[in-house]
Image 1 (cartoon, rainbow, N blue to C red):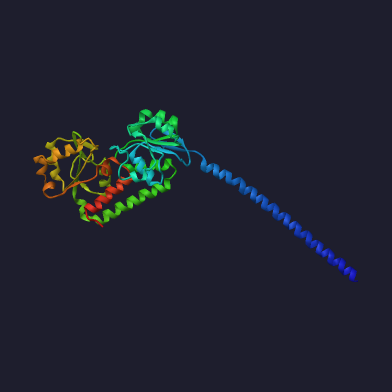
Image 2 (image 1 turned 45 degrees about the vertical axis):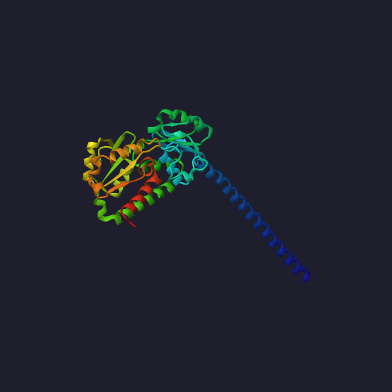
Length: 331
């Protein structure tokens, strides 16, 4: 009787042991299958994220690296764009003043190789940097586009007029940082809206913009960099041609047109040879200038040429806006 019970108990434990082993085998197979599936998906995802991206630009379409690491930039507004996106270029063109960088971003350019000027970048130096992406501009470098694209994938913006946001968005897309770029623009637009909300009737003030250069003096209108910012802010303009031209060379006889303005902003393009400053002083010492309403009422404002004009990028736009907050005493 006892022997029979022991045999029954033994068979029961044997059955339990078999079931346990079977369950372990099934679990192991399932885990192996899952591991195999997961492992095969990861390389596909990585391959997809590393695949070249096609960018439409001023010269056509170009396949660019998914995540470029060695970017060369051939415009100063482009340099401002890359820095705003958290990218330090391996090479960049120098400022229009030389030195080689503009003061408002030189602290961020340590170790960056200079590539000559926008209109004549040094192709040999560019090639030596072994870039994986070159960003340039059709207006400045169309003649050397073929040589540039032989060095690395090259993306060109169309123009360098005042609407900096268009170029900025192209550059952000080219370096695969569209989301970051959208945020940069959204943050700027938020500041614009804040200024407009607080400025009130100050926006009704008619403004004009004038620039002194070596041997030239110009009125600057809506299509120039400062004009685009003023237009977005909603300032009134005193110049009837503000929507018709980008800028206009003027003679001293036309200074009287500035009497239609409530405030005049001016900046001077001085490269170190003294010619820009000489032009400014010559015009400001003229009786026609001294008799202007804005001069007598102290509504003449000198601003920085680099950040109000030649820089031309997102950092310059924000600095210009900083200046306007101070000038109009808006907190």
